[in-house]
Length: 283
Image (cartoon, rainbow, N blue to C red; front, side):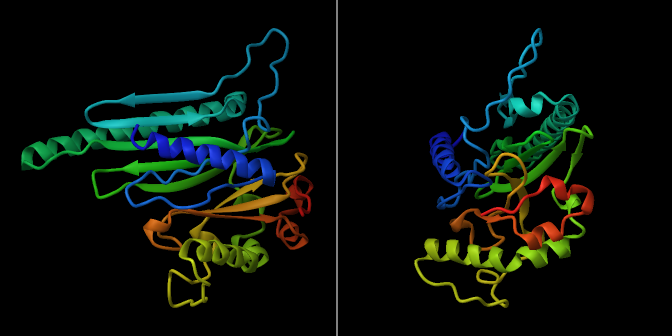
């Protein structure tokens, strides 16, 4: 796929970052417009090895489906930890099929239109790569980096997150564990925006002066992020991260941002009572 060297460099940097942090997220730096702005949102390979399979059972394997045609390049991947959960595997396999079917239909129509109207057709690109954020006894936290190119000046990067409740055998969104989005936002917005401004300043080479009338220096809300839950202690969620895609907090050239915060008593207070045992204060 295009820009493989850039992607491999990002994965290596992300692994080093997470080994030091012990949790959630990882992007540092920005690429020039037109590159795939992929962020490896995962624990290191050493810290996130899948558990051994019970005697007599074959260990689950990571899933990666790649296909390249004259119309498109497609990639959908998820880790062995997800494949080991039957319900989650079925869910992700369904998403894989839906994404592939949609891409085939869209690119077929796009090429037909290009030929009909005599303009160059540029092959599309769609990749979805799920990675482990943390694997706890009762929870599996995943994040996805989604890259899409549809023939324009450059592609776009987005993010997704997913929690698998192992006891219930069902998917839950991160926000579903909290009493409300507003309650979580109240608990994290100040440190979230302070952390974002520090990262903005590093990339811009100057201090950021907060201005709510300027989208490039405004304090953003949770709706502009993808929240993910991580763990440094490996027993409970003690980190909360926020992935911020291009254009949400700065120009495309700055790439994506991420901010990782410790879980605080204020965050725990915003958690629904039935899920509070899954959280612990972080440092």
